Length: 93
Image (cartoon, rainbow, N blue to C red; front, side, top):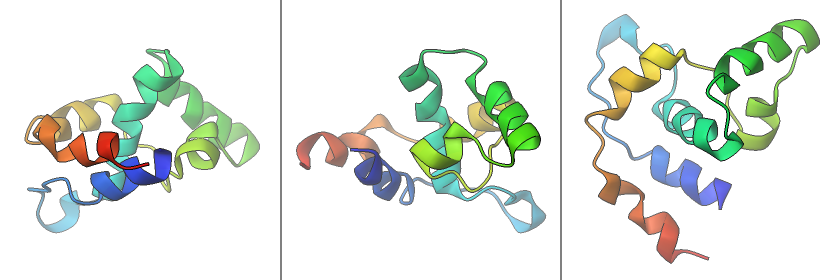
């Protein structure tokens, strides 16, 4: 399921230009999904602390994130994405 979600996230609209593309759009989508999946509002901050302290985070091992975007970045990026873009994940097995 997570691999399917990553594939769907790679097709999300990305309206960023130039140097504003620090995080791959798939990482932004996966990070947005990770918060409710892990049922923690502080999940991303915790993952950044894990990465800084241990060199690796659950975000990397569970969700394949190459970088962890900030909460604000995720909120900004998720608005142009229609939920229907992720509907392929519910039909794939």
